[in-house]
Image (cartoon, rainbow, N blue to C red; front, side, top):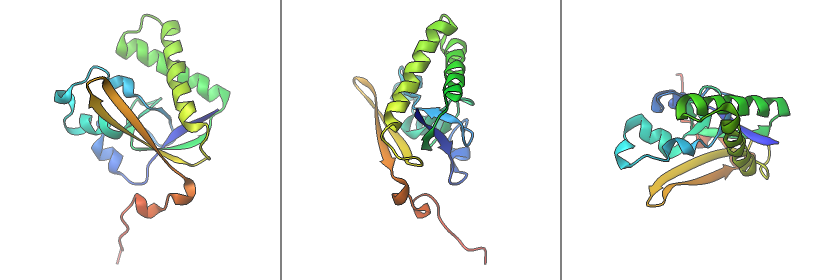
Length: 158
């Protein structure tokens, strides 16, 4: 199964998110976190997380870019277990068993985004609030199109 891991090109995520995801952790969209939000909730770093943050499956921090790669079965199981625990502790799911099916659905959604992508394809997410709720759109940046100049400003040490 293909999923995506957090990737950082610079330190900006450390500054724009309340809690940045760790480089290399498996990520999901995490849009469920914003399901009850209103425009009043969209300020500062929370707005940044809403606008374009993927959710890390270990730290539950946010990251701007994720990169597609193959996930081993054991890794997917650990991710599902961690998400289920998070759903119980943070969102009040009634049990790990009930939460695990939701966690697996979130992982499956991410797998569907990744399945037709080449390894190292970068993904971004963009969200907006609509009358119907949170709308997510995704952008795929193929490895051959992902020049470092798209993500970093280069300077001279001289």
